[in-house]
Image 1 (tube, rainbow, N blue to C red):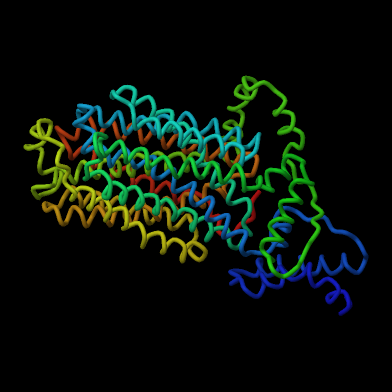
Image 2 (image 1 turned 90 degrees about the horizontal axis):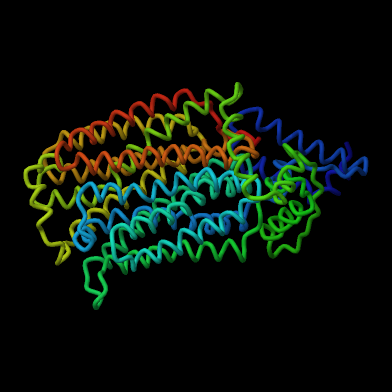
Length: 531
């Protein structure tokens, strides 16, 4: 192997050498992989052969830089928009309940409606993104979310409001699983966990944005328009703007293009990534790719089939997910998704209502005696304390997100998921035990900060446990399971909050504990290559 070979192929070797220098290698295997790639590139230079790159090798060749940070902003804004659209319902309940004359059960049904839409949309959009492309599905699902979310603000009755929130949920159900599949398929292997964790932090930013908007908008008068309707309209802007960004600016996933046998299109995306990452250096690079398609003609063929035929095949991935190879991880992940979704959304969506019931002090479950009088109380003037406390709970996500970003690479998603679910279980149990408003608020903040670690870890694990041809379908399926749990949790809270508050709170604590134990059965995926 000559010195001239290394010097002549400097451009090709630069990303690999940079990875070796900048990355903290966790094992000999990581070093061996990089060394093998360097040796292979050099030998091909000596023989004059043009080596075709696998997906992982092509991603490494593009380097890591400006493109990936811009991608994080675009995908992060989409993730934020989903969080805002989901949580806006919980913040409008204390005031909209008067204008729409809602009982506690009505509130539970209303908060459950968006999750029902997400359940319907999650698997369908996930399957279509595996067949038609990630970017196209994101544009449509984000548009559905934003348009119907905006129209909700003029709904004159509870039932029309309920229907529009359901349709908006169908859009949200598509963008959540697809955005993480899309984002992960641009990331270098050794940076994937940290970057997906960074993407997940935008959900926290969405929580803060929704809580901040509620605090700034709902307590004030807006001419003859109810303040909560203005709030709903503002909450639709992130989804609509995100749909425009993906339509005009974002490329299709190169991993999807390679799986579909579209090597030229995938090479063009890799060239774009390389050009942006080396912007200002005057570099250019050609990418020769080898096909790793699971079924090279399947995606192209399905685009020519009627939509009904596509739906008939939509259940086929489920059979593979629960086949011999993937059965254990699929069952464990199903349990985890159900437990965390029931627990988190069952409690999180009711925090503003619980804070309203703690206005005179005490814990939420200690004030059942005054619950019945709430139906006759006026919602105006709006008390700002409810939204201020909601903002504190949303902001408490921040430490958990920072912790996840720093520790995901070294600890791994499995350990973080299990430990955070168990700690969340303990914090919810203590919410039931304490007797003061201050202690309840503190424990609510702790629950919010710890549970977000579980969600971030689950986002990382979910993208790495399944191969490309199943990834979005699997995430769509499991988020659909999560929506069933969310619907159940909100209806249970709505039904029992006025009569026996202890039952839903303790049930949340128990389910979170079960989810933490089930997470121990998942395989470790730390820094593994995408299949």
